[in-house]
Amino acid sequence: MFDRLSDLNRRAFLDGVKTLSPAVPATFSWGLVTGIAMAKSVLTVPQALGMSLAAYAGSSQLAVLPLFAAKLPLWTILLTAAMVNLRFVIFSAGLAPHFAYLPLRRRLVLGYFNGDIIYLMFQKRNFPTGYQPGKEAFFWGMAATSWSSWQVSSIAGILLASLFPDNWGLELAGTLALIPLIVSTIATRSTLAAVGVASVIALVALDLPYRLSLPLAVAAALLAGTFVDVMAEKLGAGRKTSGAARRMETAAPRLTDAEPVNPPFDPSFDIQPSDLDKSPVSPKSTRSAR
Image 1 (cartoon, rainbow, N blue to C red):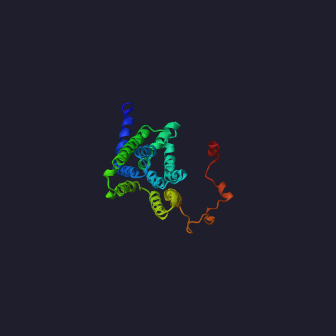
Image 2 (image 1 turned 90 degrees about the horizontal axis):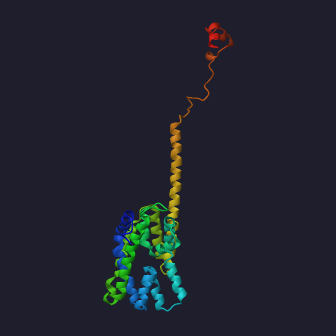
C-alpha cells in the first residue's frame, strides 16, 4: 500500500511519522500504564485486549475501570466514558474543514485514529482547509505512528502486568513526557489563556463525578481562547483605525489662525468695468483670436 502512494504522499507520510516521533515515549508510557491497569482490574485478558483495540482512548479506559470494579450500571460507565471523550468532538470539528470532501466512511476511520497529540501536531502545521495534496497522507503518518506505539505498549502491559511493580511510577513518567509536547504548542496568547483556564478549572472540579472536570475544563478553555481572540481582533481593528486617522491628519495640511480660509478683501485688486476698456488688446487681435 505504501508503494502505491505517489512520491508526494510518501514524503508527506514520512513527514507525519517524523513529526509525531517525539511523542512516542509519552504515548508508549501511557499505553503501558493503561495496559497494566486493565490487566490488574476485574477485566479478563481478552476483555482488556478488546478494550485496547476498540476504545483506543487511555483516559476513558482508566476512568471506567473503577466503575467496572464497583459493578455500577452500564449507563453510568457509558456516561463517564462519554464525558471523558467529549474533547474528541471538538477535535473532530477542528478537522472537519480539512477532510469534509472525503466520504463518510473514510471520515469515520479518520475519527477513530484521531487523538490529542495528533490533533495538536496537525493544527500546528496550519494547513489550508479543503483538499491539499499530501495533507491526508501526513495525517496518516502521525496516526499510524501513534496507534502502533499505543497498541504495542498497551498489549505489552496487559500481557506482562505481573512484571511491572506498582511503585515504578509509570503514570507520572507518562505525564512528565507529555508536558514538553503540550508546552511547545503554546504559541499565542489565546492558547496560553486556554491552557491556564483549563488547568484551574480541572483542579477546582477534580472531585466532580463522572470525570466532569475534563469536559468543563475543555469548555472553559474554548471560551477563554475565543474571548482572547475576539479582544485581540477588536484591539487590532482599533489600532488600524487610529493609525489611519493619524496618517490622514499628517498628510492633510492643517489650517491655522494665520492662514484663514477666506482671506480679507483687498481693494487694490478690484477690477472696475472702466479698466476693461483700457485693455491693450487691439480689435484686430481680438477678431483673429475669435
